[in-house]
Image (tube, rainbow, N blue to C red; front, side, top):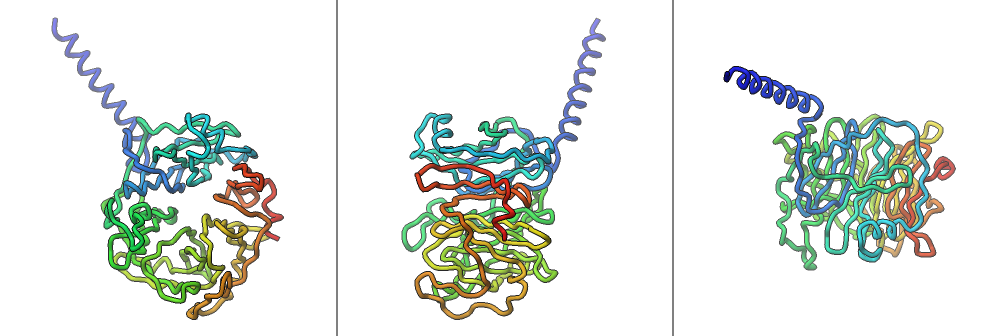
Length: 372
């Protein structure tokens, strides 16, 4: 009489194992099912197959999240006026109690993802479906997490009393199977660039960085990169990074190895009293360009041909107010651009504070005219 129960139990076990196997096959990149602990969402970047990397500066960690977005080559134009007010209404707060810290476009689905934070520090992840804003579930999701080695302590402060932990992650990227992380460490030369294999392992390569900061007239090792991208320059892969006040610096990627101290080549000083906010690369008629948004300047455009033809490095101070030197750049007809990302070479998505005070999210349907 007990045989049917035994058979039923075996069948249930087989079914459970089959379901587990199916879930394991469905979950790529060694991700696991669960609910990640996220203390902040300060940076976003996409990796392979729609995997979203979430930079958590307070937690000194990066979460890899499977968005499960479907592939879609079609771009839906977006034009949302007062997006901060719309988000505040969704979250039960006010616009002045809300910050949008980053935006990123999933290259697979073309969906726009937004990292927001309320005044009490609560992090929120949202995405756009057309012009509809929806919260992204962070419970019972496929994820993995890497905790950064040698990050600043939670109570560490700089010489001005400012917390250092918030700069443990300043920007994220992905290239050649690796998560790229800029920020600060707790080491003597604290400006750090990490290269972490993905899927995540126990390995973390990090190099300390040094630059000549022309606007400050000195070499620096404690200022973090503010924003970066990677690109090929004269046949070699480089990290292209920008810092506050606003030097543009090249680092050969093959030199950014574990335990190394790397001096970057400063190729431009783009003016003091400014902070770079976002940096993307675009193409037009076979030519490549850097596009950079800024806190106190219009959006800059730099032709890669000018980067490739520039020889040497800036090693002398450029300290006059707003003075520039090095590689030429052009101011584009856009100001107060807080965030931007590339949807394709024809379209950018832009978060911009308009002259009337409205915070708008919109897409440039014809970005090519901006690259002339």
